[in-house]
Length: 510
Image (tube, rainbow, N blue to C red; front, side, top):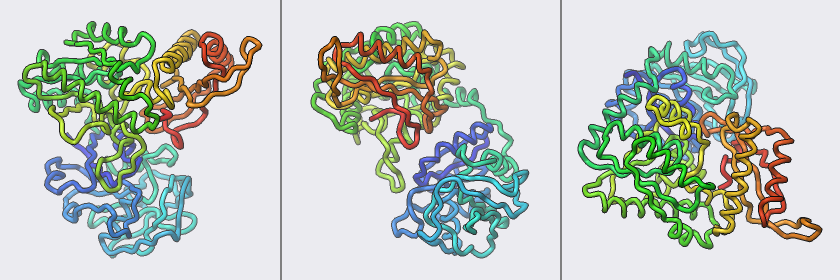
């Protein structure tokens, strides 16, 4: 299978590069910047892309790639930091702080480079850099520049090296997809033969070879990701898959019962474990969101390991980790990685486990997981379920987590969901939920002064959770939701609306 390898230098856009390539049916593999040449050779890439990153190439401890990678007989494209890395490696000079550019910038293309085939002479592109290539290495030429005369693109045809100072992978860059297509099809000679259906067969075969006859315990959460992962592994291993659904006491109203019923209908071997008291006890008095996530992650592992002991010979722990989980948690102990927030299924894992970890969806985005689920016949009530964080309501109940506050949040969330479904808006919104804030406000209810809780409404639209726009819900619907929450839920006297997109905010509040 053809593929383009992406070396991740810590950019928050790395996953978008992979996504854009998949949109044009090019299989992509992401490896860390410090991957060995031997590991890269095994993948036999048609091309390599070096991502951007937060470092300056002039820093003494900046991330770098192995010099042997430049000896491979395949095209290499450096993006932002990647272009600077290529330039410095071959003797160019990089200036720091003299030509900072952030945001949309006009790019002038002055070359017939294959990279810019059928691209207009002037385009708008997203820049995000403090360093720039001030002197080219020998054998390179400038193929594009900005209006302030900063080098925007370079190439060396003899060495099959290309560089872009801007980010073609983001939607803000005009003709960015065309540039990536030119690199993939015209330069790397890929044919675009990858499809999610290929992923099913190859992953099933991989799981069978990896696991063989060993038993797997599956960490089901009730969400799309873990459910699809379980269905996929069930196709590969059947009777050797033992599914455990843990009720951590942080789910939505009536959700545990509904989830168990869905899993039974899927034909999964499912065991229900009510660990709600344990989770709530450990979370009592914990307000820091990262501590919440790590406590929940650790407890999940503890519960699963306790169940694994009961499954004689269990060797593997299955989790539904997907790409956005990985990138937002950063690369643990890696230079160049920036932690946004940890996820219970990546950031909460202890250094040593009694179970080996298998994550078959780690390379997929959320919409790809949904497509995969449809292919392998996962029920619609699971596939169409809106995203729900692994830590559950713990990261939507800001401040102290108590049963009383969780019940307030459950009721508010149920009202929001019900009204969105009644209005016909639910299916058009990628994710909608309530957040219970750690503040109280003065109100007037029943002619009396109140000092009660505040609910924030959050609704966004997104394709892959990497970026998101806040949803413009009809004011009449919002009005009804607000009135119902304040009238029906004791202890709440104010409802506010979150109108922030991602970035700068994340989708969840914690």
